[in-house]
Image 1: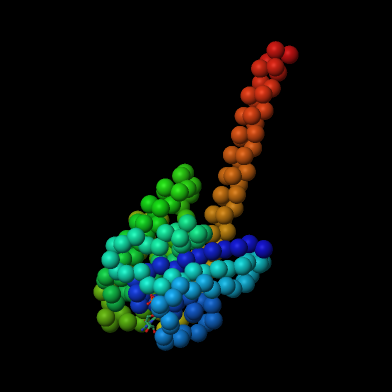
Image 2: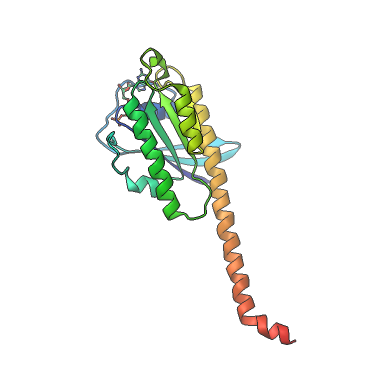
Length: 205
Ligand SMILES: Nc1nc2c(ncn2[C@@H]2O[C@H](COP(=O)(O)OP(=O)(O)OP(=O)(O)O)[C@@H](O)[C@H]2O)c(=O)[nH]1
């Protein structure tokens, strides 16, 4: 069984818990405890494969450009970065979070393909109070080579289910790529070792 670890990041009140609970239970629950870190577990099946999903929903990150929690950046295989379309500050914070994920990953995983990330503009039902237009979200996602989706955790399940399913598929591909890379570099260094030990002798035969 595959283990998939995701982390949800975003400003306080952007709707991270609402989005996640919608995905896990299909329900919208108005209020959530926001002063604790939560780790959710779910078993699911995607494309016929059984998965153990763990999702980390940390307690609020402030809207200032301070460093996001370092642990989820190292721990997670993929990220959901949530902002509120009716709160520009949460969008600016999402931008900072995307930058920090990229920088942290560049340092830790040199040469690896991008970590899967989905940028989510939540509270689409509040479009009368919109402060971030859809194109801005799309452009930001393009700049960061990540998927983008506007959703309303309050009103709809399907968009949220689709975005998590797509992200999980991407994570599975990414994990396979990393495992193949490790196997390949392992066999390359073994070949090098064999060559170093036997190379000269073989030449003289
Ligand atoms: N109108 C509307 N309200 C939403 C939506 N999603 C969440 N909310 C509300 O926004 C508030 C914050 O939602 P949370 O899910 O607690 O947000 P959060 O990002 O987890 O917040 P913290 O845990 O404080 O970081 C709650 O009052 C939710 O009911 C949505 O799609 N539309």
